[in-house]
Length: 266
Image (cartoon, rainbow, N blue to C red; front, side, top):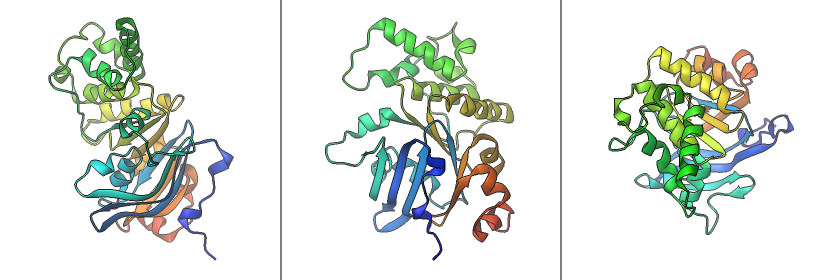
């Protein structure tokens, strides 16, 4: 019997930070993602590829309970973070989104806030009352992780909207990592950036995976090949194949994957 995608084994016996079990995502009665089971090993980058409308971004939004904020959005199945179901009874969605941060396709700095306040905003959600020195230290750490500190350290209290597009996206990454999440979700983070900005974000992926587990949705197959350790191919809401990126791009197991990678459809 052919092995189904949902039966995919734990990759290389790696420690898994987050996984999905028969996850389906729906808008009303319309199914966007069908019973998808995936492992995301700790301190790796997993790329999600596939043609437009195949459910990549919807799947990503299910990983931190943002899909349920969509009009008519709901899901079935499980998403496990460190073995615990984030959709379990009594689970606080806001707390989950602190642990599983997300960066969107277009930079989304808060326009009325300074660079400093943008990064600090994530620290002000929740019960912990940070002292000013703790916030200062966290802002600097996050901006350094976002490879932005040297460019903005002398203008932290100026408007974030004065930054370039690439800087704004790195600011959003800094805002995302300030609360020290465990997982970073990147939804086509370079789609609106120029080549130089794209390169910097890709370099950041390699640096940030030392501390975080990263899942990136991308239309750019060359980008997936450059930044990821694993690649998953989705088509029409279904997981077709998941493997190490080097294996999937050179010797895919499924004919559909090969057809997509060689440009025969999509």
